[in-house]
Every structure is written in C-alpha cells, then in structure tokens.
Image (cartoon, rainbow, N blue to C red; front, top):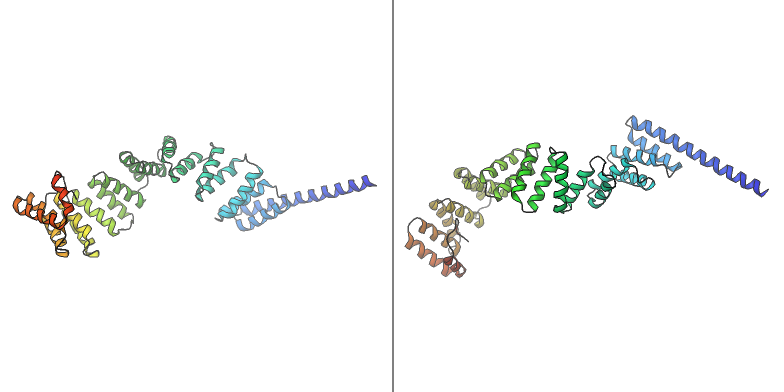
Length: 340
C-alpha cells in the first residue's frame, strides 16, 4: 500500500510538471508570435507567463529581455538577461546584451568583465577600450583603442576617444592627430570641433584654433562669452586683429569693466607690438583704478618699447611704489608679453 501511494504521488507530480512544462512552452510560443508581430508589450506578458510555469526557462528570459529592449525598458531587460546568464553563463547572446547594458549604465567594470568572457562577441573590444577611457585608465585605454583602430580605422568615436586620452596624458601633438581624424569622419559633433579648437589654441596654432571654433559654432556649439573670448584672441594672435578686437569688444559690452579681459587684450596687443592699442586698454584699467600698479607698469613698458624710455621707466618705478611685488620684474628679461 505504501509503495502504491508513493507511485501515485510520483505520477501526480510528474503529471503536474509535464503540464507546467507544456504551459511554459505554449506561452513562450505565443510570446514569440507577438514579438514577431512587433507587439512587444503583449509578448513580454506572454514570456512572463511562460516563466511563471518554468522558472528555469532560459530562452523565455532571453526573449523577454529582447522584448523589453524593443520598448526601451532597460531595467527589466537587464533583470531578464541577468537571470538567463545565471542559468547559462556560456550563452554569447546573453553576454553581449549584458555587456552593452552595463556599458550604457556606466557600470564599466561589469562591462569589461562581460566583454572579457566573450572576446569574440561583436563590439567586445570596443566596449573594453571605451570603458578604460571612461574610467580614466588612459594607459590601458591607449593600448586598447589602438588595437581597435587597427581593425576599424574609420570609427569616429574610437578616434575621438584616443585623441581625448592623449590630451589627458598631455600628449597634445598625438591628440591633434586623432581629433582631426575624428572630425573628418564625423563633422557634426560640435563639442569635438570645439575641443580641437582649444587644442590648437593650447599649442599656439591660433589660425587653426579660429577655424575649428567657427566650425563648432556652425554646428550649434553654444557661443558663450568664454567661447567668444577664445575666438577673439585666436583672431588677434593669428593677425586678424580687426576681427578679434570686434569680437572681444562685444564680450566687453556684456562684461563691462572686466579687468582680466582688458588686461589680456592689452597684453595681446603688446605682444603684437601694437603699443598704442595696448595703451588704450591699459588706460581703461587705470581709469577704473588709479592705484592699479600692474596696469601702470605695463603702460611704462609700452612707452619704453615706443622709444620713450625715461617716461616709461618713471611709470615703472611709480608702479613698483604702488605694488612692491612688481620689483621682481626688473630682474627678469623681457619676454613676448608683459611677464606678469
């Protein structure tokens, strides 16, 4: 009797299991039909029913993950792909989706870990390279980015990322090479164009700086006061003084009495040996503050350069009385600017 009861219990459990398995398959197939018809919300509900009958239904988790991705529901998608990965850690499709989702979630360590589990998966190398870049490990990023570019030299994002990595490593010349490749491949990225302009400005290539600042503006980059200051000085230093001064005057109109800008303009004209122009801006500084020793010293330097040495030296001496810290400049050799 006892054996009979055990047998009946086993048969009952087996029958229930078989029914559950059949139901899981039924709802999975219904889900696939809905998914193929692009009714993703309905499909997702069918896959959830399939999973309710079989909690280890790997294919249903994967299909539900894809359905959620189609609806841009990334949180449920990552939950489903994670469950599928727990059930089968060898499925490359699951690994690829988790790799991409972790990257989009800025979970770069997890993205790298997934990519390294499936190095042959599409995009794995790029994810690793960009993840190293995003985590500011520029040494590893450089190596990985170069390896990826060897395989795909026309990838604009990879070129930009390598250029930016070189910039962060203070290798400006290398940075310019890859920034140029990036903007040639994709000329719509206003931020990239602006950064390239700043790079040229940093290495004193003001003509190219102006070119790329203007390209950035043409692509919609915000022309803030800082942007226009950089553009204006690029024109000044590249010899287009009228253009540069006009832009900087417009900035001054928005930022009246800005001493730093006035002083920088005076210094720029001094470097270009336009001493009268430099004096115009120094005069404005001294009108704002008659005790501005720095402006007075700079004016004295202009007069010395103009050949009025006695007048200029007297102004420099007076400036040092106002600001004794300027005395150190007497011992310095004259450079291209005021040296302040």
